[in-house]
Image 1 (cartoon, rainbow, N blue to C red):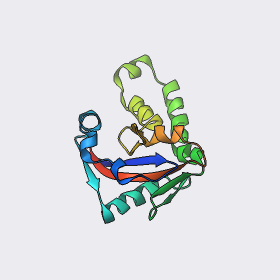
Image 2: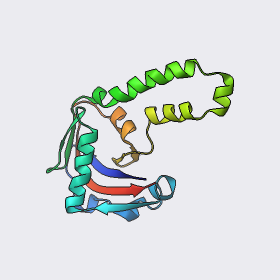
Image 3: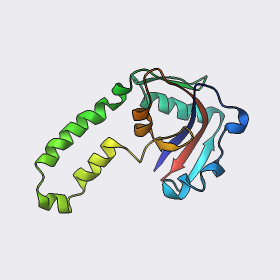
Image 4: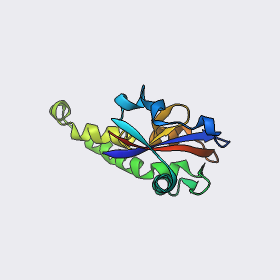
Length: 153
């Protein structure tokens, strides 16, 4: 499966020498999370930023041309996951110890609902899931997009 890794910097644009390359991820991201990363340039980069814009719809304004993300309503980002989380809590409440010992589906769903490790990652000096990035962000925060990567897991 493929997803994306987006380098960001808060409050100011990147200098050219601050932009990451694939080799910046070989000792950590590649091997731990991904099989490989592939840097996207030009029109492909724009397509990936468009995907991020769609993913953050309602929670952030993403200026694709300028490469800027502004958080506007981080709670909006979590609405669907929170609804699913509440449903999963009901399922967990009805779970027996036998279910807990043998049925991984609900536990897997819970894990992905809280922190989807198989989706977009954001690197703001430390890479993390988009879910955790949004939990740490505040409404009004502005981030500049640097390098954009496809990754395979």
